[in-house]
Image 1: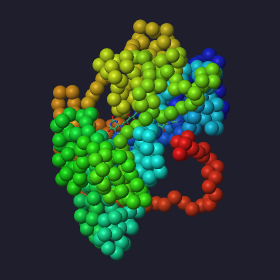
Image 2 (image 1 turned 60 degrees about the vertical axis):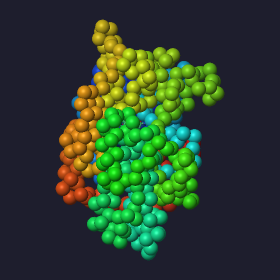
Image 3 (image 1 turned 120 degrees about the horizontal axis):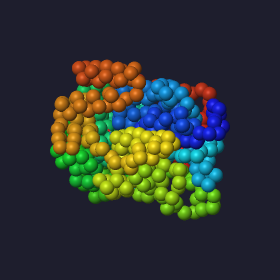
Image 4 (image 1 turned 135 degrees about the vertical axis):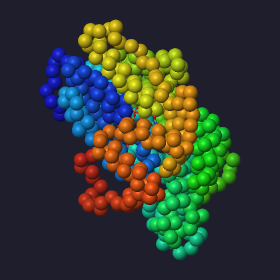
Length: 458
Ligand SMILES: Cc1cc2nc3c(=O)[nH]c(=O)nc-3n(C[C@H](O)[C@H](O)[C@H](O)COP(=O)(O)OP(=O)(O)OC[C@H]3O[C@@H](n4cnc5c(N)ncnc54)[C@H](O)[C@@H]3O)c2cc1C
């Protein structure tokens, strides 16, 4: 194991995932008392609420990502090791976490690996739909939107251009609404200026939502306002119907009512499932049965102290966890950044207090719901606070402020702010660069990387 000197006296804490939950946990843990190793499959922390802006060329990926090593060297976190690796399996009897390159022993394990896309048993979709669950997925989506626009710009007939420019977004939650709105803005403002050979009506965007309203986890006001904003951005909205199948060969989406939609690109935002691991309990049962601690959506069931049911010294935080011990959220918490941040902090304070012998300071987790928000287009948003719902420009200012203070790194905050101000006055950003992956080396063998677990499953 490639780490700095490890003390025999301090407990080894291993954290899987440097997202909101894992990183906030590490920041609040008193690392004088523990040897901490943070493992992440990427060497950076990313900011998912703005993935849709990367996918729609509004922001550069570097503006919403921050190197984990740099973050860990800030403040007092000089005692934390970082290990870039994708955890595949966890041996709870030997207390070892396995990555393809390393076996990492732990005394205390914190699982904060978030979620991955859920295709609801239509696994063939993984080969053809676009997703925006990570920075690399958002980049892929951006490149292919730009490639379609470039191809359409030189297509000789209107019929060919129309065939290339049918964007279908599946899922009317915040991510679906945000990406549909961002493509709507491209259609309305960017197309006429930068792609003069494409007429506006040749590009269509349709958002498909199974329930009877958009943003169904937010207030009815927010749903209504999002619907109006999307319509003003020339987005077609289909409510109360699910996608049945997608045929990329025919560029066609079939809905549950058997109606069809032309679709040159399908962007899938319809669901997530917990990041899966192979769990080994030393009894050889792991591959046969789903462990009892795996709950709805593959999430790890925890008690109010974030401890995974039946696994002493194993904790789960954020999106991957489902805690039913919070009386205000008996069905578990929503999968939101605030829950992840607050759980990370609470667990760190509890473990530190326990290590210092201050048991009275150990408290169960209670979620403080500060509200939720989503943006639709360049200058509109919807905000739901506990006793106040509002939308429009004022909501957008609040949305901007909250996101700016949450992004890591001063340079990133400034870059994002400049981009947003520029886009606000100019209706445009200069990020529509289509940078193709390099041809060299020609070998498929990526010597310094490990194949992703998800890729292997396909
Ligand atoms: C597109 C999008 C938009 C969103 N918008 C909002 C919003 O506006 N407001 C809001 O509150 N929430 C939003 N969310 C939800 C929010 O991002 C999550 O609730 C939050 O990120 C959960 O934090 P986490 O730490 O549990 O997981 P994550 O932040 O997802 O972090 C998980 C970390 O684990 C790492 N990881 C995953 N698998 C492995 C592995 N096998 N081995 C090692 N490392 C691994 C990942 O690289 C990542 O760094 C959005 C999510 C998405 C995808």
